[in-house]
Image 1 (cartoon, rainbow, N blue to C red):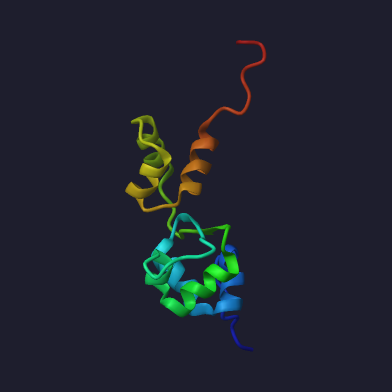
Image 2 (cartoon, rainbow, N blue to C red):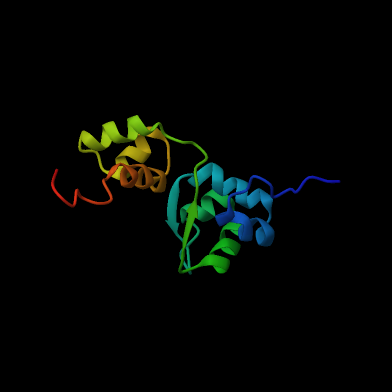
Length: 124
């Protein structure tokens, strides 16, 4: 039995891999890991997608997803204590993600987990 070539590809990139090819999905992971990227409907030849993927693949991606936002996950996981320490030091979620090389979504998830969900009802 052959292994699934899309195994390990994040869910947000499966449609891209199936439509435009695994090579395009892997290139997006390499270039944009951890970032939510707006996809233009009509990019020019100097747009970062065109430069990163090449004209054919870049324009195909924009035709497919233009006007939306593509989330490219990052496989790295930042240590919870590092995220919380940087947050306590006043760093923004974007700054923390860049410093630790992780996604903003992961930073948001960690920061939200650390907040108490409900106050003490009786104040004891």
